[in-house]
Image 1 (cartoon, chains in turn purple, brown):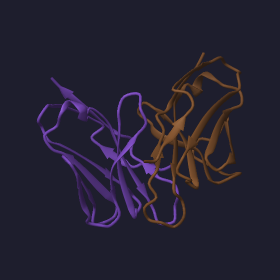
Image 2 (image 1 turned 120 degrees about the vertical axis):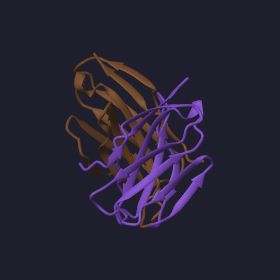
Image 3 (image 1 turned 180 degrees about the vertical axis):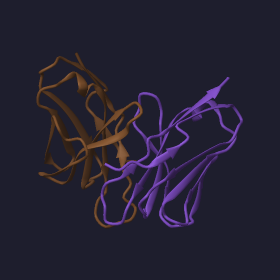
Image 4 (image 1 turned 90 degrees about the horizontal axis):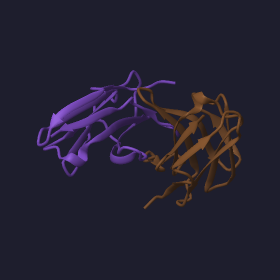
Length: 111
Length: 115
């Protein structure tokens, strides 16, 4: 099945730095979701986006639904140790009950 | 809050055993999903159910079957476990219908080791 292109695959940053990651698709989506997975746990929803151009924040996290409907971006400001984990994007096309997932971005914070 | 509960966090089974992974959701969701997650491969859909007794194959259904006898429960069955089925298994559920806000909620996962 299709997977979204998510980049970067991994990031090594220092505490306090800002983080940016993105997902691109060859298909148009009408919903973009961003999840975070802590080690040994299931993914937890961070932000949901439903309209092209939409910019939504959740605390230090900000995500955008790309104008072309084929991409989305997630930014984390002033990273802290609990931000460590794997971040997944997921897209859903209209009328489709299934999600298409990105391959994930593994975030590591260097002490 | 939506709660998706997977019956086991860790399982160790032997090659050839029949394995049942159970998932229960408490939000009256129509849709339920089983994924497996392997390093570098992301989440891959095994099976999907959109109603009781209804199922649809995902991207990697070979070696698996599912059962949904009640709306809240979705079981993944490995008929004869093999070592290449060692993985993290994730269950999810979503509301269903034509709503544009069809978010999937995940369980904590079952880490299965087949020896």
